[in-house]
Amino acid sequence: MRTYCAKDYYHASRMAANIISAQVIMKPDCVLGLATGSTPIGTYEQLIRWYEKGDLDFSETHSINLDEYKGLTAEDEQSYRYFMNTHLFDHINIDKKNTFVPDGTELDSEKACRAYEEIIRAHGGIDLQILGLGHNGHIGFNEPDSAFAKETHCVKLSESTITANARFFATIDDVPKEAYTMGIKSIMQARKIVIIVSGEGKAEIVKKAFLGPITPEVPASVLQLHNDVILVGDEAALAEYNKEVQ
Ligand code: GLP
Image 1 (tube, rainbow, N blue to C red):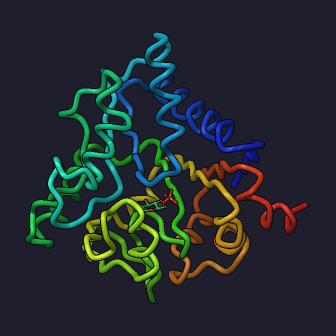
Image 2 (cartoon, protein in one colour):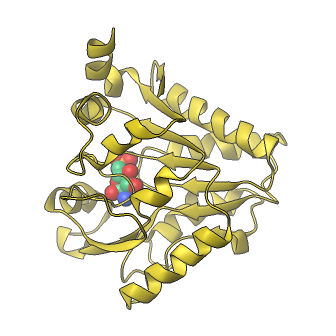
């Protein structure tokens, strides 16, 4: 695993955006695995700026998002489809037909997950997967568990995730209790992975995930087994990690 420690969130975002740009320039019809959460917002802002300057062209690019809340429509401001449209897709020349997010309106979990697996398979997997990191070590919505879930599946969100994500909703009761998420196998099959971390609140979990034992109790720890991962973070998020490796 390579680590890139930026002095702050802005520079970490630029680094992540640089890696995505390189991928899109080298392979314009690549498949990007995209993530939501507050962390990648700065990365997407940077990509939009470079697109507006004429440096990037997403017309042939495809994207497959990690996850979606079960029950939310694309128009719901809290849905991850809405997030992706407003934070990235509406501002670049990606063809929305080539962008995929699990269908939160499909309430038959088995059907929704099977359809998403088929989308991932039909695209030949993911060239570059962007990840954020949950406070409990989750990636996508793969919550701590007794085994690594392989394929797209429906998860019951943990209390800590519901509490963390409540900040985006009017009340905590409005946070959906379930979500569809890409599984660990699809994430691990991505050819390259960039995980972005920011802020002191992530410092402990970063250390645990990347220097601790590989265990489904800390889903991100599985990334230690991938041969092309770049951990991009600001000094605050990498503080505990850096203390151990230096
Ligand atoms: C959510 C998303 C994850 C994301 C995580 C961290 O639960 N499903 O994909 O990585 O939150 O979010 P943040 O970047 O806001 O800390």
